[in-house]
Amino acid sequence: MKANLEKTTVKDISYLINSSCLRANNGISLEKLADMLCSSDRYKVYLENGDSQLVGIVQAKQIAMKILELSRQKSDEEEMLPAISYVMNFYKGGDLAEAPVSVKASSTLKQVLELMQQNSIREIAVVDARSRLVGTLEAKNILAHYLQAKAEAAL
Image 1 (cartoon, rainbow, N blue to C red):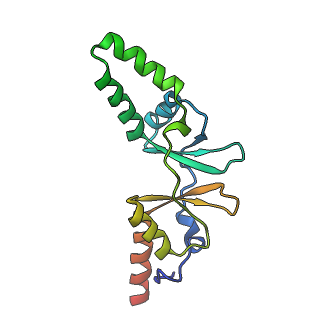
Image 2 (image 1 turned 45 degrees about the horizontal axis):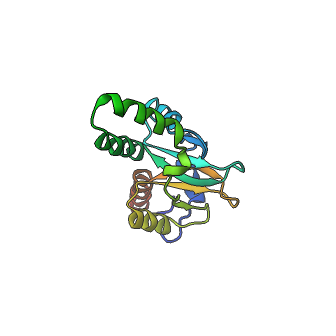
Image 3 (image 1 turned 30 degrees about the vertical axis):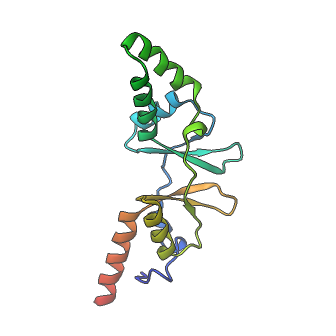
């Protein structure tokens, strides 16, 4: 096991890639995205285009913020509920999506961690050569790998 962050690549730790992340077409409604998020333990959905390329990320907090924005604009519940229903069905995932931050299998762990730090994220998308989502890597799993490799090297 490699403990060197400059030499270890994503491919070297591919067993840590989580392929069960939430995925959806970028044209999906916010209501369906909210359903997906509420029925899982995840907090973000990775959006793909028709060619299965990663094109964006929507977090639960973005949907909640959109609803909060509406609730501040409407004075009473009778106005607010139809407005929320409209937004949840009118807006698509791509309308609220953030640009994806991703790495390839050839990226070093140092590069991965630097990108995570620069973008204030704990999970990063791993894509193949055609920008299709392979899965995600979490900072805690990289740290666990590094600590285990360092401990083994000390033996």
